[in-house]
Amino acid sequence: MTPTAIKLSKSDNVLHLNYADQAFQLSAEYLRVMSPSAEVRGHSPDQAQLQVGKKFVKLTGVETVGHYAIKLIFDDGHDSGIYTWDYLYDLCANQNDHWQAYLQALDNAQKSRDPHESVVQIMG
Image (cartoon, rainbow, N blue to C red; front, side, top):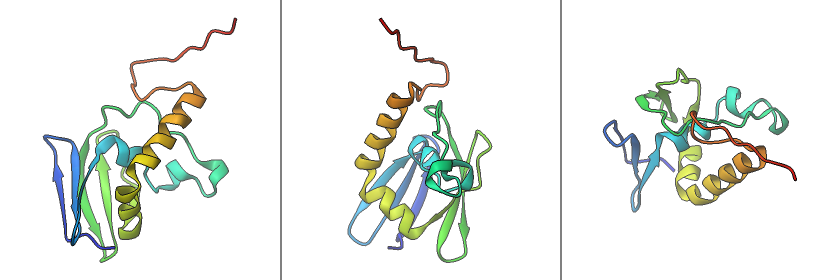
Protein backbone atom coordinates (compact mmCIF):
# COMPACT_ATOMS: atom_id res chain seq x y z
CA MET A 1 0.00 0.00 0.00
CA THR A 2 1.48 3.34 -1.06
CA PRO A 3 1.44 6.18 1.47
CA THR A 4 -0.32 9.39 0.45
CA ALA A 5 2.14 11.51 2.47
CA ILE A 6 5.46 11.02 4.25
CA LYS A 7 6.84 13.61 6.64
CA LEU A 8 10.01 13.51 8.70
CA SER A 9 9.67 15.42 11.96
CA LYS A 10 13.24 15.96 13.13
CA SER A 11 12.08 17.69 16.31
CA ASP A 12 10.08 14.60 17.34
CA ASN A 13 12.48 12.15 15.64
CA VAL A 14 9.46 10.49 14.02
CA LEU A 15 8.44 9.54 10.50
CA HIS A 16 4.76 10.33 9.83
CA LEU A 17 3.05 8.16 7.22
CA ASN A 18 -0.43 8.89 5.93
CA TYR A 19 -2.50 6.39 4.01
CA ALA A 20 -5.95 6.88 2.49
CA ASP A 21 -7.74 6.15 5.76
CA GLN A 22 -4.99 5.87 8.38
CA ALA A 23 -2.05 7.78 9.82
CA PHE A 24 0.97 6.31 11.60
CA GLN A 25 4.03 7.55 13.45
CA LEU A 26 7.19 5.46 13.47
CA SER A 27 10.11 6.35 15.72
CA ALA A 28 13.65 6.57 14.39
CA GLU A 29 14.74 3.80 16.76
CA TYR A 30 12.01 1.45 15.51
CA LEU A 31 12.82 2.16 11.87
CA ARG A 32 16.56 1.72 12.51
CA VAL A 33 16.29 -1.63 14.30
CA MET A 34 13.82 -2.88 11.68
CA SER A 35 15.94 -1.79 8.73
CA PRO A 36 15.53 -4.11 5.74
CA SER A 37 19.24 -3.76 4.89
CA ALA A 38 21.54 -6.75 4.52
CA GLU A 39 23.61 -5.25 7.36
CA VAL A 40 20.65 -5.81 9.73
CA ARG A 41 18.68 -8.67 8.12
CA GLY A 42 21.58 -10.57 6.61
CA HIS A 43 21.05 -12.60 3.47
CA SER A 44 19.13 -15.25 5.43
CA PRO A 45 17.40 -15.28 8.84
CA ASP A 46 20.38 -16.93 10.54
CA GLN A 47 22.60 -14.02 9.45
CA ALA A 48 20.40 -11.31 11.01
CA GLN A 49 22.19 -8.97 13.43
CA LEU A 50 20.29 -7.84 16.51
CA GLN A 51 20.54 -4.07 16.68
CA VAL A 52 21.44 -2.85 20.16
CA GLY A 53 22.03 0.57 21.67
CA LYS A 54 19.86 2.44 19.15
CA LYS A 55 17.57 4.19 21.65
CA PHE A 56 18.91 7.67 20.81
CA VAL A 57 19.50 7.27 17.06
CA LYS A 58 18.21 10.17 14.97
CA LEU A 59 16.63 10.23 11.52
CA THR A 60 18.44 12.85 9.46
CA GLY A 61 16.96 12.35 6.01
CA VAL A 62 14.51 10.62 3.71
CA GLU A 63 15.08 9.99 -0.01
CA THR A 64 12.71 8.47 -2.54
CA VAL A 65 13.82 5.36 -4.41
CA GLY A 66 11.93 5.25 -7.69
CA HIS A 67 8.18 4.96 -7.23
CA TYR A 68 8.33 2.02 -4.84
CA ALA A 69 10.36 2.88 -1.72
CA ILE A 70 12.28 5.31 0.45
CA LYS A 71 15.77 5.25 1.87
CA LEU A 72 16.20 6.52 5.41
CA ILE A 73 19.37 8.16 6.65
CA PHE A 74 20.32 7.88 10.33
CA ASP A 75 22.89 9.79 12.36
CA ASP A 76 24.80 6.59 13.17
CA GLY A 77 25.82 6.37 9.50
CA HIS A 78 23.27 3.74 8.51
CA ASP A 79 21.68 4.53 5.14
CA SER A 80 21.54 1.26 3.23
CA GLY A 81 17.98 0.13 4.01
CA ILE A 82 15.45 0.39 1.19
CA TYR A 83 11.98 0.55 2.75
CA THR A 84 9.47 -0.54 0.11
CA TRP A 85 5.87 0.64 0.37
CA ASP A 86 4.75 -2.85 1.37
CA TYR A 87 7.43 -3.15 4.04
CA LEU A 88 6.63 0.30 5.45
CA TYR A 89 2.95 -0.55 5.65
CA ASP A 90 3.79 -3.80 7.46
CA LEU A 91 5.91 -1.83 9.94
CA CYS A 92 2.95 0.48 10.51
CA ALA A 93 0.17 -2.09 10.71
CA ASN A 94 2.13 -4.53 12.87
CA GLN A 95 4.18 -2.07 14.90
CA ASN A 96 3.27 -3.45 18.31
CA ASP A 97 4.03 -7.07 17.37
CA HIS A 98 7.36 -6.18 15.72
CA TRP A 99 8.38 -3.99 18.68
CA GLN A 100 7.50 -6.64 21.27
CA ALA A 101 9.45 -9.28 19.33
CA TYR A 102 12.44 -6.91 19.20
CA LEU A 103 12.27 -6.23 22.95
CA GLN A 104 12.06 -9.97 23.62
CA ALA A 105 15.09 -10.60 21.40
CA LEU A 106 17.04 -7.94 23.34
CA ASP A 107 16.02 -9.53 26.62
CA ASN A 108 16.97 -13.00 25.40
CA ALA A 109 20.38 -11.71 24.31
CA GLN A 110 20.81 -9.72 27.54
CA LYS A 111 21.33 -6.55 25.53
CA SER A 112 19.95 -3.04 25.88
CA ARG A 113 18.34 -0.35 23.73
CA ASP A 114 20.49 2.19 25.61
CA PRO A 115 24.05 2.48 24.28
CA HIS A 116 25.22 3.61 27.73
CA GLU A 117 23.89 0.57 29.57
CA SER A 118 25.13 -2.98 29.99
CA VAL A 119 22.95 -5.89 31.06
CA VAL A 120 24.47 -8.45 33.37
CA GLN A 121 22.74 -11.61 34.50
CA ILE A 122 24.01 -13.11 37.76
CA MET A 123 23.74 -16.86 38.00
CA GLY A 124 23.23 -18.12 41.48
